[in-house]
Image (cartoon, rainbow, N blue to C red; front, side, top):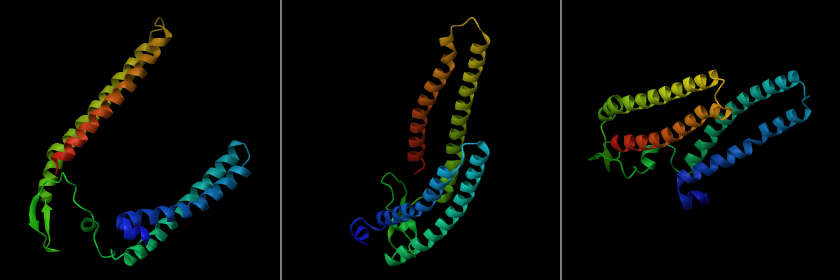
Length: 192
């Protein structure tokens, strides 16, 4: 409650979830430790332990999520945000561009961006740009694999050159990562 009063509902809800999650992790940690300690070193017993732990985790995750729904609703009720949609709690981001209008629900002024414009931008700009980026990285990756096959097929080449295609691929991945960050920021700013 002190966190909610000082930092607001969103931060308090995060810390409530984090505390609940940390407490709930005790069960998988205990079972995992027991299985790790008492499992023999042969492959069969390790496989059985892995399957048992996986089944336990599925059941645990389901119970965890259901209990958090209940606990989260209690906190939302306690802090007065149970019937409040998330959009009305959050402030719009500063770069959001839209037309100012009076909200038909709350009566307050808000920025509005029509859904059809967003869908149009996603269909005609975002999707083709993302597909082009995927195609580019796929083609570059295929080129590196072809180069790798060529280098491995020529036994006269020095051994150090066998690493060249992998180094090139690492450089390409790093460069594409930087490029895609810029493209993502551009798309985000363009799409309002």
